Length: 229
Length: 239
Image 1: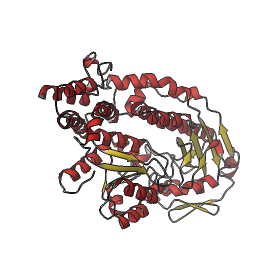
Image 2 (image 1 turned 90 degrees about the vertical axis):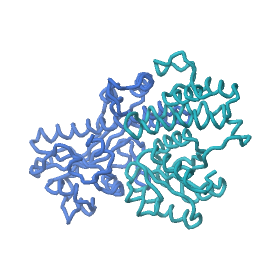
Image 3 (image 1 turned 180 degrees about the vertical axis):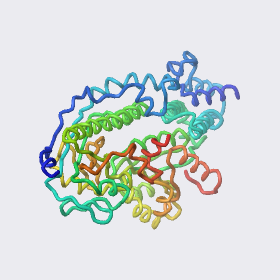
Image 4 (image 1 turned 180 degrees about the horizontal axis):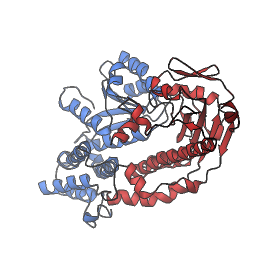
């Protein structure tokens, strides 16, 4: 069992989606994350073990490499794709409640801003990290976030902006949301932002790269009694 | 000097051949963080597959508006063009202060690549979307460089100098000034418009101001003038 889960983890880390995937070259023809996850399920390995000791372990290794500057965003995206492909096979177990995602995160590019590349990459990384992401798209105002928080009972929000003008829109949005939901955690990101700005607008955290937010919200789950589901 | 300035064209819309705006595989790999030696085979393949699509869908255009018919002065840390006050940050204004006149530059690669990126993202082809987006960002930088080179050529012929290129949103220059800058341009100049939040449409567009005159000079690298360390351009420069 351990060996199979290790192989799954390696496939995620190396971005090997399936046997048909020609990449990476040194794994050509070998089973990928999809086949190995199927094999694990057929061998009655619990879905929870596959998720935690196979898939998420692989993504954790990817996160560590990214933090250390040993890999870059394209490789994170390749691994996240392998992760998401294997996760499809675990869907019935999520639906039955046998396994659970870590929680829900609502993401959106703030009012006035139409940039979505950074936000999309963040979505991919968070989903690959075992979170359910509700992506509200671009040009999202406070009301839309508030409605989504109510609808999904979400406790974590991510704001993105790429302009110095639109990042200013974050301050009233943080205020509006925190007035209604004082327990909601708001994380901000985007090229022109920094930690000082996040502090000034009363956001809970700022990260320059998606892995930082993933680590932060993983720690929230691990270190508090609060449910983020 | 004023006679020389008057001899400069006022508005120049450039015909830029898409073939002149290109990016090599190595350049694109570098912008993604890799060298030719350490690029993963999967990323190299996506770059290979995307090159034709990228180059077929670049629609570069650019232009220059020279403001030598306007009164350019400075007031504290601001550049004043007739009655329009630009820049409250001295990072840039101190380098433009000695200009006899200024030129506004715009450049774009059109909106085709941005639509392709959106399609790729919508179809969960994140890597391809990301690679094309990076290429588009590099290509618009190359386009604005062509525009700047043209300005340099024109001014060099008259034996006058230009400053570095400065853009709203960088070096502490508030991007809100984009509206003031665009008020000095013909409407929809080079097909670029502004949203209320100062976002240029097409998104892959650049606007900038350049000082012109006898007493100005170009610094070796603009980012060294700026103290804003968290700027991604400066971080790339520091690498």
